[in-house]
Amino acid sequence: MDDTERVRLIRLGNELFNNKDIERALKIFVKTQYRDGITRIADYYFYDKKMPLVALRYYRMVKRQDKVNEIFERMVFALGRLLGKNTGPKVELPPLKVSPKLKILAEEILEREKNNTNT
Image (cartoon, rainbow, N blue to C red):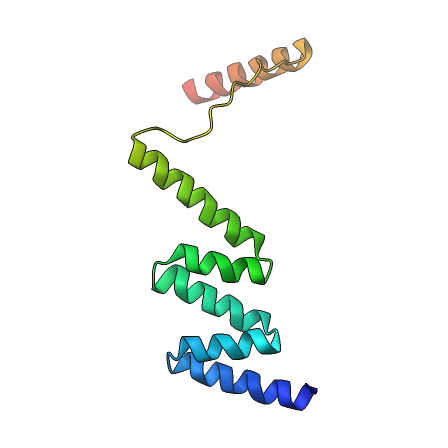
């Protein structure tokens, strides 16, 4: 398809989308490989229709890994809630190592601030 035909089809797809003819708009956006249009379709299913699994398919089609990750994270969170488990990450951090000189300097600054607020 030449550029003129592609532009005409994308305009038609946008018009169909604005008139809520989502399925016909989607066919045109896929045919023309119009990433922004496919992303809007995915957003429609994700945010408006609350159908994340349908949206996931279209986000993957346009390689929107950020949205794919968001859907997966929400699904894991929801599954954890359903099972009654806390699904938050549990990370054990090693104790913080601070240079002795830096520690002394920090203590002096804190003491100075304490003295300034008391006067």
